[in-house]
Image (cartoon, rainbow, N blue to C red; front, side):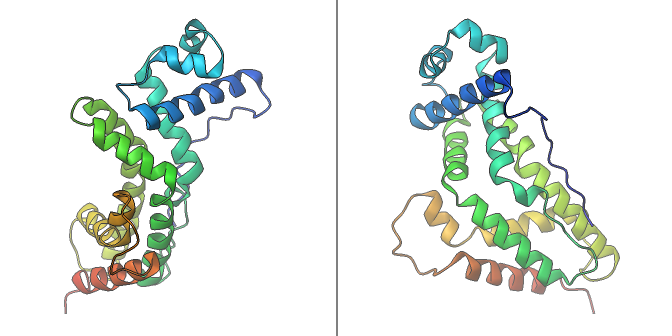
Length: 214
């Protein structure tokens, strides 16, 4: 079984310093989503919280570090698919279906969609933001699933190949339906009726493509 790999900062919720830090992170998230990364200043974040920019700097010496904290906070709240159990002894379709449903449920929450749109919108001007987002979220999750797939390949339950490529293909299949409409904030006039059906179709296609060689 793949173990939990989600970090825990250990900050007590009743610690005044931790609460102040969280207030800055929450304010930064709201302003990043509303105004973009470039359009948000450290002064505006400090002003929203009601403190000075000097105080903010004692917690976050740069806007880049504050953005990383925003990513970590969202991943911690909504990224439980990064730590869900991936049992080696259960059938491939069952585990993939469970993982896929949890993944797509989380990816279509408003904070995750807003964060993804922000990163994509700023990626050309601020490529380090995209790198920070990918390293702290998607990369960790895909690495865990790749370990599980590698074991299933070793057991002969999936055909041999590149586990990470298989992960990317499965994720792409899961995100090929309703997720695209959610990401673009399009109305519900689409031919897909549920995320669960999208995941079921993804599992079927993946298992057909990666079934063991005869």
